[in-house]
Image 1 (tube, rainbow, N blue to C red):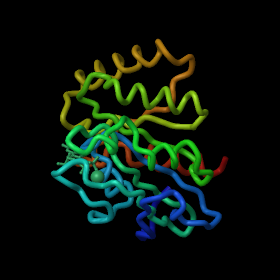
Image 2 (cartoon, rainbow, N blue to C red):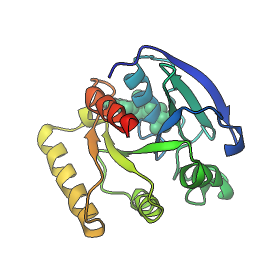
Image 3 (cartoon, protein in one colour):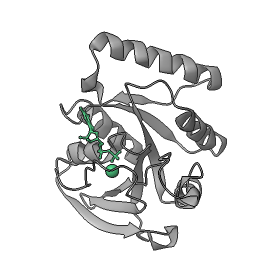
Image 4 (cartoon, rainbow, N blue to C red):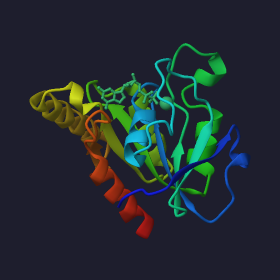
Length: 197
Ligand SMILES: Nc1nc2c(ncn2[C@@H]2O[C@H](COP(=O)(O)OP(=O)(O)O)[C@@H](O)[C@H]2O)c(=O)[nH]1
Ligand SMILES: [Mg+2]
């Protein structure tokens, strides 16, 4: 699949404000600074579509981007950023849980994790929440360019071991680098597949 048209549609501070049309949402989430905005720009081929920020934790809105008049790419707020107020920090904000667990627009969710890091507790907790609620999701390991091939393989194997302790069937996973365009074709092909279901 190729993306020809990507237009910002709206920012929502409450789920009541998200679009009400019949198109479906493919959403992206992860810890602040994991590389979500960069990945969205890489996938859509639009450098400035989602803002890439050096100051993490700023985006607390749900952003809808209308793709080829066929589906929405949804940029969700980051979670797990400590230097904000207590209510925003409390694991996953109400905005995130309202959307992810209850919004019927959501068709598939990609959870981004930094390929360089040990599995983070907050990400594992989030997977549990998704599993318990039957939300279909996949994992994208980001910033792969910052690792050697051997280190990447090692980290992925370790991650899979940890997940296998909890899951009988592992979620689909992808490796990305927004710097190099790695993972673009695979992720877009998977989205195309999801949209046929
Ligand atoms: N080397 C490298 N840096 C990245 C990649 N993706 C994001 N970054 C950097 O990581 C920082 C956070 O990226 P951003 O997309 O704003 O993360 P967000 O907070 O999850 O939206 C920025 O400094 C990016 O330039 C990547 O694939 N490779
Ligand atoms: Mg961002």
